[in-house]
Length: 113
View (cartoon, one colour):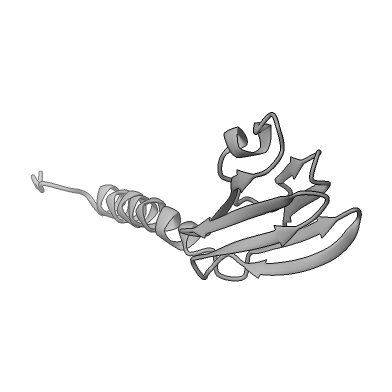
């Protein structure tokens, strides 16, 4: 009887598990790049800007009130608004397709596509 440290099936299983672990480790860095992900900014229902989330920058949007958007690491957020309650600023970062942030008093909406 042959005594091997690993059998062929065990080696294949270890290789598959290693490949999956490597893919899971790389996924967040690919996701954070924001490449191909955009934010559509509307004011009163009209598109006023399309922002590439792959490029870090700040944007000032003139709506019923002025609001500033910050783009960092493939995500966007309201960083400053002249609205009274600041709920939009407290909402935080969005970056996944389908997510939306709104500043109701300024009538500005940001949707990730």
